[in-house]
Image: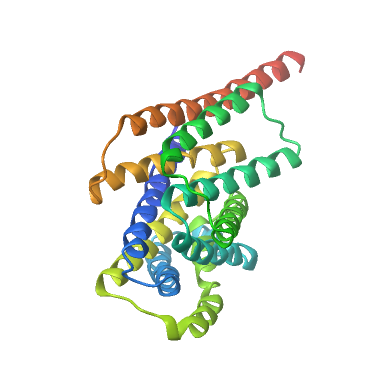
Length: 303
């Protein structure tokens, strides 16, 4: 294993933990009504802007001139920022009208479908082992949340589906990032006009507690800001399919976080579903690696 592979693996693990932490923080804040969805979204994005530009400022002092030019060569895009805002606001409002299990299934189902369909449309056909691994991982995810499934409200279903599609597009846009910290920072910064409009439209309904504010800031600064920056680094070494499938691990980590931080029970179902999800993820990653290596051998043999 070389340094680049180690960086991708480490970044992926950290990003997934950050995503799971975000889920737990959102659940604690919105589930306990410690803050309204609009205020949570606004504080989440604004605190992400602050922490990211502190990091941009700090790293600029340690980069060489050539590295600094590379870091400032790309500054995200309005499309990525729009997707980021849509994901965040739709998730917060969708979370209110859906229970945790149903909302998670809709969100990650939308992410999976969007990313895999885009992969197929681009001409990157999935191999048999990838299809099997994907099916196994998704089966494990559904098996985990099926006891808590209820018929979702139409508006909640739409909002969480939109959130999942937006996150999938944001992820796909991030795969080409040459300067993840700069791109992530400017993507967050570009959400500011949307946040201001959101605040003006929902100001009369705002309510928050100290706990809600703290949870929103932690969600934005750590789990979102730093987490999404690390995720952009991870995406540079993951295929579209791998990037889609590894995110199925997030609900497992979040469920464990629920056991630790909200006193939820560690059940046999959680252990069994974890084994299915992890096995499926491993099958997708190893399957893609095997076919890539096989293609290289054939190319060398024919060339």
